[in-house]
Image 1 (spheres, rainbow, N blue to C red):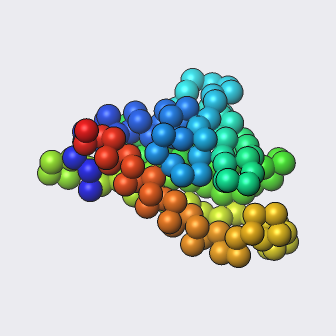
Image 2 (cartoon, rainbow, N blue to C red):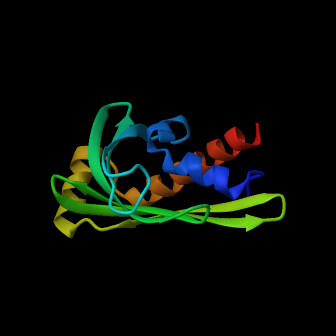
Length: 142
């Protein structure tokens, strides 16, 4: 739960250039094609960890103002994941739910353990999503 207007929270989430302000893994992004934040538009998502940086190409697949924002992620032209933010109005603010769906083939998941050092990406994602939403809530509530 965050004490923020759902429309304002949606605007912050869909401004991918700012995601690095809240996420411990995202370093932000840059819109590449289409109107920013609209279905079909694409952006480069920049990511970081202490020992590495990487980018992915993301395509917006859902954009319902004040309600839902989702995008499909590709790396090296292959599907990697889908990320979704659902915003539900509540008395005094809104509830934001962040989800991710891993779409990597098994062999890619096995190889990524070697390159990232993460055996269970889902555990890392859950932790970073909680940190992201906590930081976003603190920003919104200032």
